[in-house]
Image (cartoon, rainbow, N blue to C red):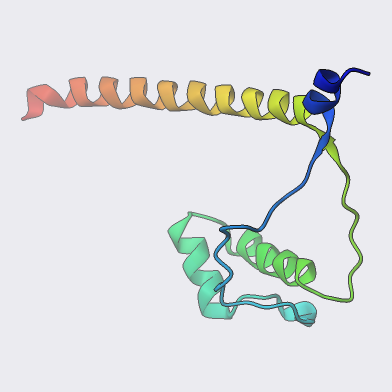
Length: 115
């Protein structure tokens, strides 16, 4: 394998540099109550139009991910695979945004006579 091949395929890892670490939750055993307070769960559900059950599950999963006694597995990913997946997701999001913009334009045109 040449140096160029290695550089394009070496694993990438998540770096916490520059990540805001002042989140209101810390590593802890949150039990079955979840990491978020009931008020935060309700606020999250309202702000993002989530079903309350989904917001509760999110809190529970967040709590489990912050449990220092839970073992999780980190798997390396090749840069090229990450780039392919990222590009695919970005293109899908771009298509969704363009479709939404078209729907907004159509709605605005329908409402112009009302003005």
